[in-house]
Amino acid sequence: MNILYIADPKAADGCYYYRNFLPALYLKASKLADVFVNNKFQVKKDIDKKTGVEHKYIDVTSLVWADIVILSRYYYNPGYIGSEDQDTFLKLLVEATKAAGKKIVYEVDDDLFNVPTDNPVSEHAIKAREVVLHIMEYCDAYTVTTERLGAYLNTFFKKPTYALPNSLELFKFQAEPENMQGLGKELRVALKVLGPKKEGIVRIGWAGGRTHQLDLLSIMPALKWAKKEFPNIEIVTLCNKEMDNLFEFPHKNIPVVLSTIYPEILTSLNLDIGLCPLLERDFNKHKSPVKWEEYTAAGASVIYSDTPPYSDFITAGKTGYSAIPLASDTTKEDVVESWKIALRVLIETPDMRKKLTKNASRVVGQKFNMELNVLGWARAYQNILNQ
Image (tube, rainbow, N blue to C red; front, top):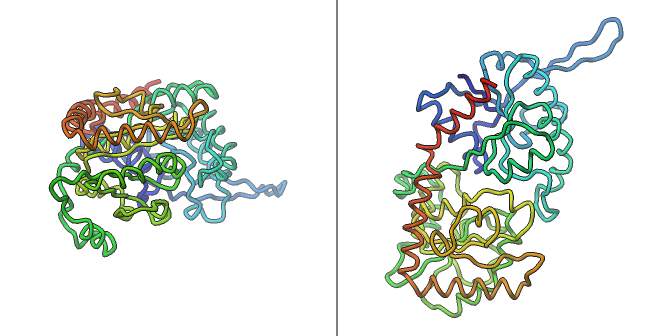
């Protein structure tokens, strides 16, 4: 079985890492499939001598080898397709793949139709909607992060759908970075300033990007309160400067890191509590619980907003501590008070933190382990090939 991922092999974002890079790496290493990642295609042009009409098409040379072609999200990478319009390119790629008799799998890890206007990619999401629907119409199957997202996609076009969870390389969360010199000066300095966690300190962490700005702001008053209330806590952020500037109280920041070394860096922070705030809205409901997975694998207990996707996967009081999300039927004050309670309980109760982490680690190890879940990816692709 030969699988071609249409993706940028140099991409460093989490979406590529979890949905293309890791599956490709493990499928190949396990000898379950031969895999190639490529995003450089030539768009050729022919002109009809009689009519003078220009015809554009994709050079299918690299498609001949593949049995299955994986398209992800918007595949928004115009730098690699010359002057061609992105939508035209994707439609040509779908046409060429179908003409070559190859199976097309549309890999989707987000709700591409309900992107909030406050999200930095909302404008592009609107522009890309037509081509997203085109791919959905002509693809042979969907692979998604959750069953909830898969069910939503099927309200547009019904397709065989495989829920393949974002899965971790758990062994990477067991060790700190080996080569500090290879991390870059800014990151080395930040880790040195953070230093080892002192005895009696409870370290609380938030990691995320600018698409989660409103999620973070919904709990910021509770964090500000906790910083004043508990002199023994440290708050650490793992984010870019834009997001870090939202914190108006003393804390320490670790700059954004490549996905390939993110597990080791997150583990090295030695967090006691990881924060998973999320507004209750359709876009967020179709996300995955990967942030909870990562904090758990790094040894932290988690406070999460009691809304999907987290409420679909986390058992309150057993594998995480729930707090109220900002929603249509809650107020900002409700959210802040709920998060204050959750923070107080976990800051003051180390035994509770240990219990949550132990239980959650068992679940993550069983259900979100890439070494085990690669078999699910292989079965899904084989079923699509056979359909």
